[in-house]
Length: 74
Image 1 (cartoon, helix red, strand yellow):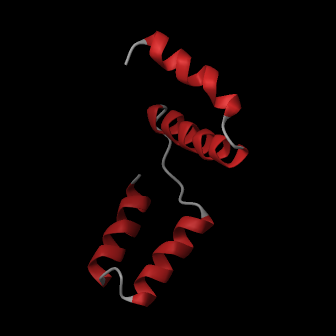
Image 2 (spheres, rainbow, N blue to C red):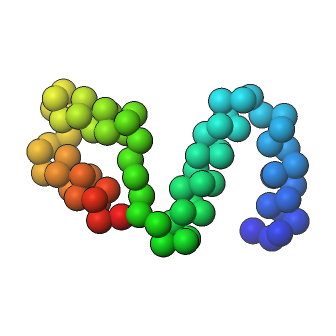
């Protein structure tokens, strides 16, 4: 993607619904932190979703453990 294409997308963002702008801002901050070598910190919402998945049987214990291990390593 070229710089002009990126700029065109960024110019359209103010027309997006506020919740989509918020989502994009969170993603951008995560990418920036990752590029700076900062460890990823899972949000309470993400941790809650993992716990709910574990309790519901959607994810196996091994999958849940792998997710938590990945978050701890990041």
